[in-house]
Every structure is written in structure tokens, then in C-alpha cells.
Length: 484
Ligand code: 5AD
Ligand code: SF4
Image (tube, rainbow, N blue to C red):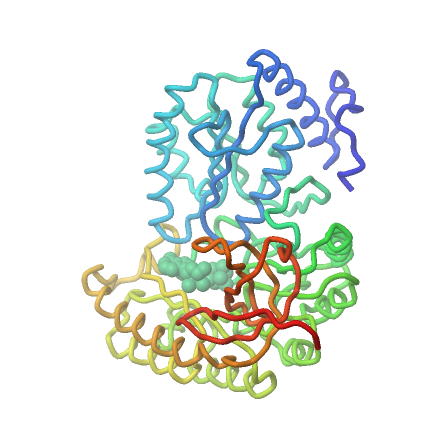
């Protein structure tokens, strides 16, 4: 593992190794030398800042980038004071793209005042040719651009950027590489995300992910288990297995293994107390998975099961490959087997051709499924996806009224669900000091709901019993309970 590799012992005057990850460690050592020289010249540390847009996958990728930046000698800082700023971008909806362009204008201001500052862009947005063109044309002050498939090359690309005056652009169209054993720096000491697969093969007609994250590739189970065991030894007790569609894990492996099978192996790892995962596609959720979840004390009582729409007509146009009835009977089956589970979802409003009657179908599913929470999105047209070419795109003003109908139902349903656990004493993993009141600690229940209760910093990362005294919409207020 990387912890055992000492960068100072690498011969940086030799030819770079051709195999990975040795090649990246070689470039980390080279970058480190430059960074050290620069620190001495300036008489101060060099600072780096990473801003993450989008999903848990990106958050995990950012931890890998920070791991490398710390290894080469940077310290973390806020954006305006940083010598190196990197944006890890998202392109699932257009508003994420617009935020990046907006922020770039601000960054340009910092760069003018801070000569020598470097700016990098990476992530999903960079996999789109039109974005790269726009950056070259309108944002020539950006120093480095790379994509999702060659993120593992960051050290090498960063080295090229440090020794070059020109914009370095490195985008791969595809990859089947899964490079193991690079550094990463966790945001929390006690919990961590772990990639179990990359990419997506589903091609939902509205979604750009299969184009920017490429074909589905699963990591070998032994690599995943080894990483989790190392995290457990390092104090991590809660893990989140990450993939665009975890339920189809393992299909392309040398020795095929189902997601349920992987979970059973993860359960055996000593020191891991909570297991979460994201995201499940309803069409691939197996009875075996429900069985493994039901029998497990470690797998959390939470399932994120994106619905997208409750209208079978729209689901078909979305290429989701299930009907309204199939989704509802899946939810019924899960709730029958695991009664205390919390189910959350994603919903898109305003897909091409969606009528108010289709939205009523969505509302019907929300009420029947009794979601604990739902992320509701306005459909965003993504160039290159099949839905972008569909007739009957709906004007934004019309979508707004339908969106409000859905949001209202989601809030009502979530309110009914919340409070289910009122009065019970439940186990909470303490995550942070409450952002608004320092006398309170904030933790999470197995079902993912937040709980605030009086307590001190020494509880961080601990599991404590909390009596849930009051439910305030989406969270509980409680009191720590001692003894059996
Ligand atoms: N427009 C709006 N929402 C989208 N999502 C994915 N693509 C789009 C799009 N083009 C939503 C889906 C998905 C979540 C991560 O983002 O609901 O589950
Ligand atoms: Fe996009 Fe569908 Fe793949 Fe999810 S399953 S990433 S919505 S294509």
C-alpha cells in the first residue's frame, strides 16, 4: 500500500516507470521536489484548495486528489488564499456547469493578485468536447484540465503543469483501467466512501453519466476488501460502497460475484460497524440483496432507490426498464421484509412529453411508497443524450408549477414518515459539533436521519445511545442515554 512508499527514496533522475501506480509515485516525488524548492524560495507553505461539485463519487475522487497534494507537500486552504485551486466538476444538470463558469470568473480575480497561482479543472464536465472548447476560448488562464478516466494520472499531469507555461489538457474518451493503491485523504476519520465500481451501462435517456463516466467496470472484490480492512485498522467504522448502480456489481469480474455476495464478505471485516451503499437501480435490486440486508446487523436501514417518474409512459421514454406497478411492488416487498427501513428517492419533473397527468402518477407513487425523503430535480437537457433530441421539450415556466406539486407531496410524505422513531432510544454515530450550537453534537441514525443532542467533542466518531425526544421535520432532538 502507498503508506509504505517513501517518496524521498524514489530516484527522480531515472527514467519514469511505465507501470502504474509506480509511475504516479515517481511524478509525486518530482512534484515534491519542486514544491519544496518553492516553499524555500517564498519562505512559507504552499496551499491547495479543492472544490467538489456533484455526487459522492466526486467527493471520493476529491479525497484522492487531496491525498496526492498532501503527499507532494501542499497544505489545505480556502480558495482565495491558495496557490493551487482545483474544481472537481459535475455535469448531471446544467446549473452545476453554470456554477463552475461563475466561480471561474472569481478565481481569475484571485489569480491576477497572486502571480504563480495555478488553476485546474477535472471531473465529469471536462469529458464534454464543447466544455473544453469553451475553456480554451473564454478561460485561457486555466492551467490544467483533465477528465474522469485519467484522474489516476493526476501527479503526472500536475508535474507537467508545474513545468509548463501553457494550458495542459488531457482528456481520455474511455478507459478500462482501474488503478489501485494511490494515496487518499479522508474527510472524516471514522467514515469513508469506497468505490466498488465505475461508470454506468444503463443509458437512461436523460442522463449524461454513461457518456462522461464510461462503461461499467467493477473493482476486484479482493481489492475492495483489502481497502476496507485497511480503513478499519485506521479507525473507520462506517463505510459507504459507491457506484452508479451497485446492484449490477461484479458482472465483468474474472470471478463473478453479486453485490449481495460482496456485502456478505464486507460484513465479515472486523471493526466495520455500519455499511451503507449508493445507488441502487430498481430494475436490478435482487431478492438476495433484500435477504442479506434483512439478516445483517451492520447494513444500515436505509435504501436510496431512485424512482425518477411514477408514470409508466415516462419511465419507458426514460429507458428505466420498470413500470410504476413494478416499482411499487418492489417497495412493498422491501418494507414487508425490513419494516424499519427508510427509503429515499430521486425524482425528475419536466421530462419531454410529461403531462400534468403523468405528474399525478408520480405523486401517487410518492404517497403510496411513503418516501422518507426525495431529491426532486427539474429536468435538464443534456446535449448528446437521447432525451435532448425528443420532441415536446417542456418550457421551464410550465415545469415550475408541476415541480411545486411534487415538492409539496414529498414534504407532506416525509413529515408523516419522520417521527416514526419518536420516543425510542437508538444508536447514533456522532459526526460533528452542531453547526449552530456548540453545546450540541450531531450524529446519524442507521436510517440516515440526523439527531442533535447535548454532548462534547470527545464523542466524535463514537456510537452512543440517544433517546429521540422530539422530531423537528427532518431531524430529531434527543438526549444521550447511559447504561444498558
Ligand atoms: N436532469 C435532471 N435530473 C437529472 N438526473 C440525472 N440526469 C438528470 C437530468 N438530465 C438526476 C436523477 C439522478 C440524479 C443523480 O440526478 O434523478 O438519479
Ligand atoms: Fe444515469 Fe441511469 Fe446510470 Fe443512474 S442508472 S447514472 S440515472 S444512466
